[in-house]
Amino acid sequence: MIKSYKVRLEPNKQQEKQMFFQAGCARHIYNWTLAFQKERYEKGEKFISAMGMSKYLTAYKKENEWLRDCDSITLVSAYTDACTAFKNFFREVKKGNVKSYPRFKSKNKTTPAFAPNYQAIKISENQVKLPKIGIVKLSRKNYIPIVKKYSNPRVTYDGLHWYISVGVEQEDYKPELNPTVLGVDLGVKDLAIVSDGTVYKNINKTAEMKKLEKKLKRLQRQVSKKYDMNKDGKVYHKTNNIIKLEKQILKLQHRIRDIRNNYRHTMTHQLVEKKPHKIVIEDLNVKGMMKNKHLSDAIGKQGFYEIQRQLQYKTQEYGIELVMADRWYPSSQTCSKCGHTRTGKDRLKLKDRTFTCPECGHTMDRDLNAAINLSQY
Ligand SMILES: [Zn+2]
Image (cartoon, rainbow, N blue to C red; front, side, top):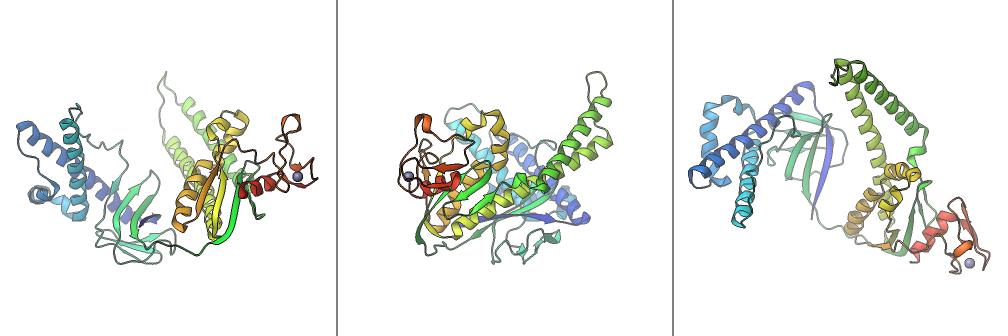
């Protein structure tokens, strides 16, 4: 099994400059290859496969010496990608689909990215050695396993930070599981209640997150005000001040996103680390719930889809069975002790935080009761 890892890089100014340069070279060679193949195709000449491209690149590099400052494998991957795009194009043409040529990568619309030489990259606990760039610090220590060979390494820029992703061949990790079943009730008040009593609070309600969100709203207001102030008729202008503010906004959005996602990862990791043989969650009707204006914002922030996605691949890795309980299963209306279901007028309302059973008198926190029901699903 190949598992991929992605970590933020912390390059210095010089390294960052080189990264932009290499991403630029990759884009250049990609476009050059497309143009080269297109010209041959239009002249009725044979397609040159990626294997056959190297001599053309060597010739091209002789005329364009600046390309020598780029990791040569980066260029090879760039023309390989372009050849693949062309092959896909041919396949469509053969099928009779009229398709336009593979698109050129424009400077403004493509995210800067390149593939470093996978044989030359070396990763240690907190840094990575990249050819032509040097030793770059990683933002997370001991995250990527240290192995001899990494597959498909990519370096990408998201408008703010650089990241490296690598694939690592891993032996299937199949831990010994215990006979317990965990029910997980996802919600808005708390993020999750687990049938064993563990509670994951809603991180968006912490003072830190509230402060960050407030700051974000303030910056966003400032920017829109500045846009209005500099409006020229119907045309908006970006001033240096606006650019500065927008960068701050992006930074803050990333920080908030990272905090939320780290929290989700911590939760899903802890769940599988309990090594139950089964985990039951509700198959949430997220789309339906998003229609509720009052709830949609809170639900969006919780990231239920992302939690489902993480649980799916993490349980698979551990060999844990993941069950999605039917969306109509009345987990919050059923007594987890005697099985009685409250129906009709007797139903628990959303504001009722405690479940009381009219049959056996069992009383319990509403969400914990639901989580236990899920574990018995
Ligand atoms: Zn009962």
